[in-house]
Length: 469
Image (cartoon, rainbow, N blue to C red):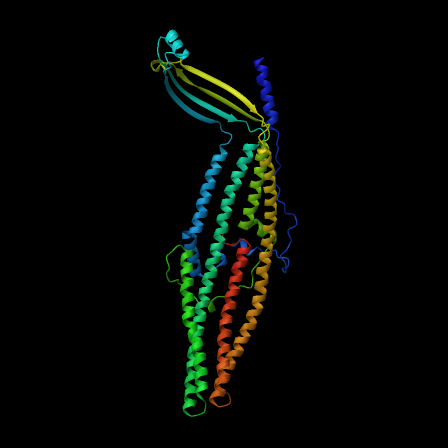
């Protein structure tokens, strides 16, 4: 009879363990475009797959990036999160392993002499107190009938991978911020040089106007106008110097250091903007972009949680066993085999009524999974939009920069001609001042546009998933 019961229980466990209440995860994206908007079919490898040291060539910038990847606090926090997720994963992997506890107890109980227990103890045991010494190992094991423990492992593993993707996303952000900050620093250096050149040019013009004033050819208004133009250019110098200090401090903070000077070893004019920035196809971008992978893993976690919540609605089988030593006297507590005892048991628990708590948890898990699906689709579309936007910026900034170059050349010629005409008396001081003011603004704008081009290439690199390799 006992053999039949054991065989029936084994068959029941085998049948139940083959059951599955959850579905395999499927990525809910089937309509990803073949190409990015405005881009032609591009079979070249995406720049997003390039390592940092292949995409950036300036050594001073690479030194800053290396320092940031080593010292940046956000990145170090992300690494600690990976360590925490790894610990959770190791714990989840032990979900099928039985729990084992050691318990040691020693009690002494003296019942009342006037009570039933006291009278019985005195009459039958010839003592007025009872001692009990117990040492046992207790084992419990839950059969993973509905795949609950399996789903817990899947969720923990996805959480571990998710923490790694978060770290990658943080790294891409840091790399982009360091590169953009470095480019802005070079832009400020260039604008500072432009302001100083313009001040020197204004000084020469002011000297000539003062000479004409002494000769009675112009009024004091001409001197005042020229001085105002010269002060305008001079005012830019402390403004730009202040911004340089602030930008250096920001880069120092990114690299985990106290504020200090930043080595450039190059100028904005020495940098070139690449015309070959291959984007590849959207599918490649989605496979390497950390933030998209992070949301995808979040969807896997949500799907696993649905399986866990669903399994809790069904019966759970727990097998327990305990054994050890027990005695009423300490002197023979460890007498073997007389003090040995053992208990084995098993039980099936089926939730019936828990005020809809388990059912509500299951329905909430499904809602959260639906939200994760929407978040994933949103992340995919947002990533494709971001790449398309950066492509549009690069194309239009290139055209705008070419126009700005022609404008600066024209203004430089205008300043030269106005100076010659002014000296020969064929142009007045207002024309000279206006030409110089236009040139100042034109050169400042040209430096800003080149920096914008460089930043757009960095943004495209990050949008394509680059910066963590």
